[in-house]
Image 1 (cartoon, rainbow, N blue to C red):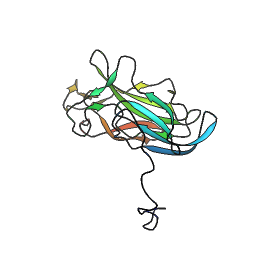
Image 2: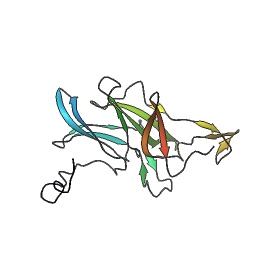
Image 3: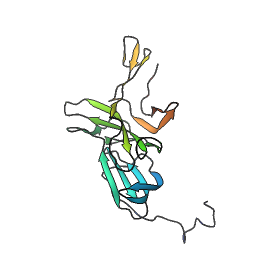
Length: 190
């Protein structure tokens, strides 16, 4: 427990710095006692706007694995005029970890990208927390429509536009474990 007695300049402070390939907007996540490659590690997971997800050994700083949420021929999304997320948009929202899913536990991550033809994509990935390998046949393309007549509506429905909506807060869960994406710069209206 943190107290004024143990949080001071002689016993509390930065322990290390780790290199990643882009800006970090999502909150890092920590899990203790994760079995990776036959050893037990305390792990810090870090998601990056350059569409990467890292697993670092929290005690040594060694990179345990790194994966990209991009498919072949894609790049992170470009700036969409949201001053909070610039100049690239890859993984912005804090991932969610469910230790009870998959063989080792699953981390759910939303990645935004732009393909070679200029189309924007948002996909939800379920990554194995021990290996970074994609689980459950994913990733899954995010799409949605909602009855309404707001901006960008079509035939009485507001349609999710992966190039205009960016999740900002964390991925949230509702029963039964269905992912929902919170948004900030633009939101769906209906």
